[in-house]
Image 1: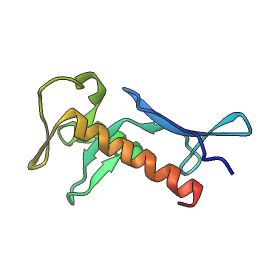
Image 2 (image 1 turned 30 degrees about the horizontal axis):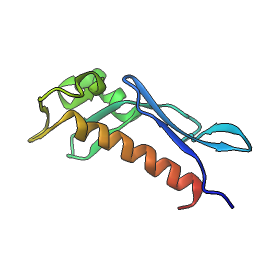
Image 3 (image 1 turned 45 degrees about the horizontal axis):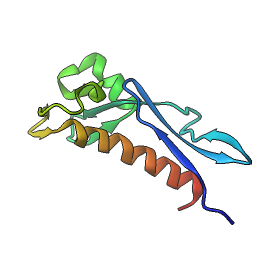
Image 4 (image 1 turned 90 degrees about the horizontal axis):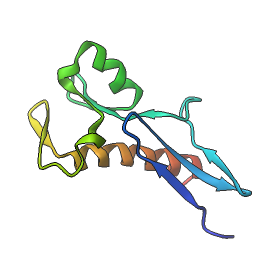
Length: 109
Protein backbone atom coordinates (compact mmCIF):
# COMPACT_ATOMS: atom_id res chain seq x y z
CA UNK A 1 0.00 0.00 0.00
CA UNK A 2 1.29 3.47 -0.89
CA UNK A 3 2.22 5.94 1.80
CA UNK A 4 -0.58 8.44 2.47
CA UNK A 5 -0.28 11.94 1.08
CA UNK A 6 -0.92 14.41 3.88
CA UNK A 7 -1.16 18.18 3.51
CA UNK A 8 -1.16 20.89 6.15
CA UNK A 9 -2.45 24.43 5.72
CA UNK A 10 -0.93 26.67 8.38
CA UNK A 11 -3.16 29.68 8.00
CA UNK A 12 -3.04 33.12 9.54
CA UNK A 13 -6.54 32.73 10.99
CA UNK A 14 -7.32 29.01 10.67
CA UNK A 15 -5.35 25.85 9.93
CA UNK A 16 -6.26 22.34 8.82
CA UNK A 17 -4.76 18.99 7.89
CA UNK A 18 -5.98 16.65 5.16
CA UNK A 19 -5.18 13.39 3.41
CA UNK A 20 -5.78 12.31 -0.17
CA UNK A 21 -8.00 9.20 -0.28
CA UNK A 22 -9.07 7.72 -3.59
CA UNK A 23 -7.89 10.86 -5.32
CA UNK A 24 -10.03 13.14 -3.13
CA UNK A 25 -9.00 15.32 -0.20
CA UNK A 26 -10.36 14.39 3.21
CA UNK A 27 -9.92 17.02 5.94
CA UNK A 28 -9.35 15.59 9.40
CA UNK A 29 -11.87 16.90 11.90
CA UNK A 30 -11.79 16.95 15.66
CA UNK A 31 -15.16 16.86 17.39
CA UNK A 32 -16.74 17.31 13.97
CA UNK A 33 -14.82 20.51 13.21
CA UNK A 34 -12.21 20.38 10.42
CA UNK A 35 -10.91 23.88 11.19
CA UNK A 36 -8.29 24.57 13.87
CA UNK A 37 -8.20 28.27 14.72
CA UNK A 38 -4.56 29.44 14.58
CA UNK A 39 -4.55 30.63 18.20
CA UNK A 40 -2.29 29.58 21.07
CA UNK A 41 -3.00 30.60 24.65
CA UNK A 42 -2.06 29.99 28.22
CA UNK A 43 -4.77 28.72 30.57
CA UNK A 44 -5.08 29.87 34.19
CA UNK A 45 -3.42 26.63 35.31
CA UNK A 46 -0.44 27.07 32.95
CA UNK A 47 -1.51 24.61 30.25
CA UNK A 48 -1.06 25.60 26.63
CA UNK A 49 -4.33 25.98 24.77
CA UNK A 50 -4.44 25.53 21.00
CA UNK A 51 -7.25 26.14 18.54
CA UNK A 52 -10.83 26.79 19.57
CA UNK A 53 -10.08 26.83 23.33
CA UNK A 54 -7.39 29.48 22.81
CA UNK A 55 -9.63 31.49 20.47
CA UNK A 56 -12.44 31.42 23.03
CA UNK A 57 -10.03 32.55 25.73
CA UNK A 58 -8.84 35.47 23.58
CA UNK A 59 -12.15 37.27 24.17
CA UNK A 60 -11.58 37.32 27.95
CA UNK A 61 -7.79 37.12 28.20
CA UNK A 62 -6.12 38.59 25.10
CA UNK A 63 -2.95 39.12 27.14
CA UNK A 64 -2.59 35.33 27.46
CA UNK A 65 -3.46 34.52 23.85
CA UNK A 66 -1.53 34.72 20.58
CA UNK A 67 -3.29 35.02 17.23
CA UNK A 68 -2.20 35.72 13.65
CA UNK A 69 1.38 34.67 14.48
CA UNK A 70 2.00 33.90 10.81
CA UNK A 71 2.08 37.65 10.15
CA UNK A 72 5.16 37.86 12.37
CA UNK A 73 7.11 35.03 10.69
CA UNK A 74 10.55 36.15 9.61
CA UNK A 75 10.69 38.89 12.23
CA UNK A 76 13.24 38.71 15.01
CA UNK A 77 10.70 39.11 17.81
CA UNK A 78 9.39 37.18 20.80
CA UNK A 79 5.85 37.00 22.12
CA UNK A 80 5.10 36.54 25.80
CA UNK A 81 2.87 33.79 27.20
CA UNK A 82 3.03 33.73 30.96
CA UNK A 83 6.66 33.63 32.08
CA UNK A 84 7.96 32.29 28.77
CA UNK A 85 8.81 34.01 25.51
CA UNK A 86 8.25 32.31 22.16
CA UNK A 87 9.40 33.10 18.64
CA UNK A 88 6.81 33.10 15.84
CA UNK A 89 8.36 29.82 14.67
CA UNK A 90 7.81 28.22 18.08
CA UNK A 91 4.15 29.29 18.20
CA UNK A 92 3.68 27.98 14.65
CA UNK A 93 5.31 24.70 15.70
CA UNK A 94 2.75 24.32 18.50
CA UNK A 95 -0.08 24.69 15.96
CA UNK A 96 1.63 22.30 13.52
CA UNK A 97 2.17 19.72 16.28
CA UNK A 98 -1.54 19.86 17.10
CA UNK A 99 -2.39 19.24 13.43
CA UNK A 100 0.13 16.38 13.25
CA UNK A 101 -1.43 14.81 16.35
CA UNK A 102 -4.88 15.14 14.77
CA UNK A 103 -3.69 13.31 11.64
CA UNK A 104 -1.87 10.63 13.65
CA UNK A 105 -5.00 9.96 15.69
CA UNK A 106 -7.17 9.70 12.58
CA UNK A 107 -4.67 7.38 10.87
CA UNK A 108 -4.13 5.23 13.98
CA UNK A 109 -0.43 6.04 14.16
